[in-house]
Amino acid sequence: MAKRTEEELLSDVERRLIDEFTQLPPTAVVAAVDQARDRFSGSKIRDFVPLLVERRAYADLSHAAI
Image (cartoon, rainbow, N blue to C red):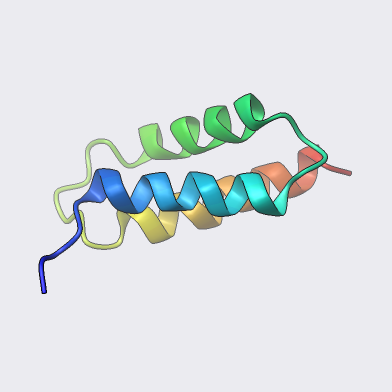
C-alpha cells in the first residue's frame, strides 16, 4: 500500500472541515487550514503535521462559528 503524501492528507483535512463547518464559507476553512499549516512549516518531523493542522484549524474554526 502506497503511503499518502502530506498534500493528500491536508486535502482530506480541508474536506472534512468544510463538511463539519457548513455555516462558514469554504474559503474561511481553507484559510484556517493554511494558517495552521504555516505554524508547522519549519517542523523537521512531518509525520504528525496533518493531525496537528487539523486540530489547530478545528479549534480556530470552532471559535469563528460561535
